[in-house]
Length: 555
Image (tube, rainbow, N blue to C red; front, top):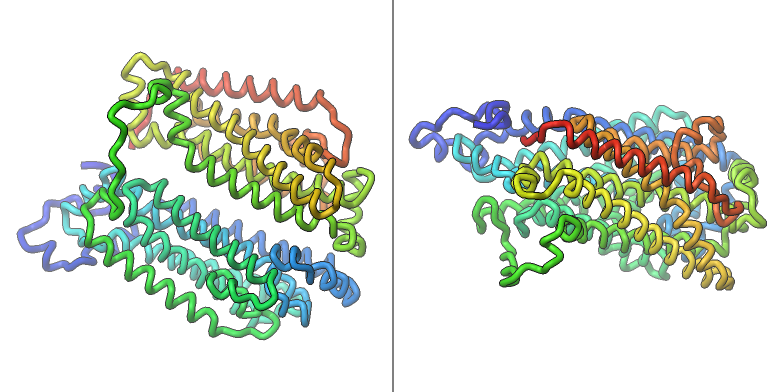
């Protein structure tokens, strides 16, 4: 009997007829309590991060655009097709208060993050449980066939409702002009509604494939498609495409402008439909299997799979492709407004001061340097996930059979770290390429392509240091491996927001990203890049040394 079964309190053998009498939802309440216990750290961190990020952004908007003149200038710049694609529908610009600005520029972005939280909750407590064999063990007791999915949906719904309530209370208590209590309640409800939609989407994708990563990747692709449809619709004339996206529905509540609640009914209807579909599909497959049959493998494996590096590449290729495509699009979106950067930022004093501290010959260069920090942080999210894949393989019990052969621990873990470092560098390359191509088209300056690609690649040593930190935690303190997420989060807060809010310089020095030359505005300095590379090499060596000295852990 596993510890998970004991904790769930369903380890006792079922009496004859008990399971049938309990129904398809038997044991749901116990599984909800078990899931909440397992996520007692993850969910509060998600909720607090989204809450504090929203509150700080609302305060920043109130400070940066404190006068009607400032907001009028923002309307002029955000009214372009590129600006609307980055933010939301044009109707918000009719009465551009601080609240309208928050709904216009932040709602679509945070909706993506809320959707990500919901997807991860669902797949963690459904498909991942089946993949590890725990779901089959639990369902041999008094647990109904729908209990796992119902429990996961209940936990996701609770997390979204708590987030929505905290957003409503937090924004309503700020006392900012244009951010009233009624609009704040709608703002929180819109996030909760979008979160429920993507929880339902994940409930469907969890039935389609036999692997948790496949279910997560498919659901994330749906989130990406929803955002792209919203962006394409809002940048067009009639906005019809936005009505195909739940993110577009949330933005068409026109929070703090019209406060229309009815579009959220579309979200709730879609969420209910997806959840019902998930339950229906779960009855058409076996536990541990997916609706979509797995493709038969090749009669003979590729020679690359006989090497640890080839196996690591195979395991990481889906995530790398997804992040690469996403970063290319992200770079292209920022590049598309590069030609308008001077008009967008010329009347915002705090941003002007931040750009002046960065330097460069023009606002466009300084703006590109500031945006490059965001691109690097997103790439850092990938490298942390990739570096920690070795920990997931270990706890799932898949590493032990490999290491029982002639494969050394150093080669096994080193292959995952090498893919993380190489994949992160490739992600920076494609992001810089997208930024450069779109920026060159926006400004008419073809020389921006190699310059912005170089600016992106300059952050590669900082990514390698991030991998090194993850390696040290994995090697010496495996149960604290999740602390590696501190590096990209801190880099974003200090490297991006800190430039605007003027954090002390020593705080930026604590981040590896703070030592990278701010290209293309600054001059290239090889010394910090070489030092970061050496630090990364030392951290990776230290992490692998720790791995050789400890026992493997499996759940």
